Picture 1 (spheres, rainbow, N blue to C red):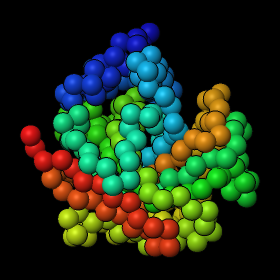
Picture 2 (picture 1 turned 135 degrees about the vertical axis):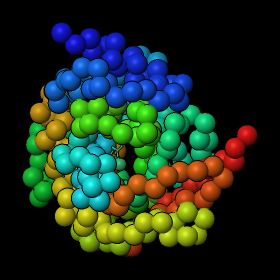
Picture 3 (picture 1 turned 45 degrees about the vertical axis):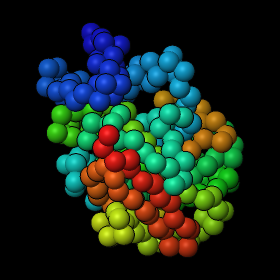
Picture 4 (picture 1 turned 180 degrees about the vertical axis):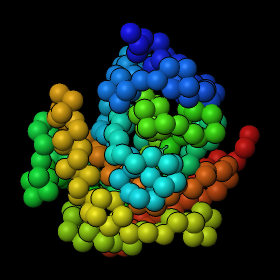
Length: 257
Ligand code: OOG
Ligand code: MG
């Protein structure tokens, strides 16, 4: 039997102390189902500490991300309140191990989701959409992992910044995405890179959450997954992401102390 709590504790402690650890799968292989059990146990630790669940994130919804990380399946994890940064925030990097940033689309739900939705239904469960960036930070050494490892590690979730909300869902099918660091373009792409249309991430989130017997409460965030590969985050820089027709979001990283 796998001791889910013990493995969750190791990942949680790596996150709390910003200390990388070896891939869990190097010691003992485990299945995808077991990986989600470890993820769930690590989320329970966070909730026990007082963190609140604010939504879910999808990962590997774009080819660019799958290629960058060498994996080929959609994954999902949880977002908590301590991960959320204000738009325009100054983000301290000390709490991360080797953070990266990636441009995303974030949805806000208007109703509880407890069953798989079709694309047509999905938009009726949405309140708003916003340009966003995710800060990912693998707890594994060298940012290297198997699919099972990264799922256990709550899909590298570490932070997110969400821009202004709007209700313009339709044109997001193929909107240009530009991410800049200190004014220099570091990634460009299209929201079409996210499952062909980021609304499909809502469909997938509804399926994954309901299949695991959970409910995504009204007012939750759904991070649709990165439109491009991720970019390393360094101290003392300004990071800006624009999605055509939707708006932009930004943050700065504090200088090394
Ligand atoms: C896993 C998380 C993937 C995305 O948007 O595709 C992800 C990772 O790359 O470490 O968040
Ligand atoms: Mg992401």
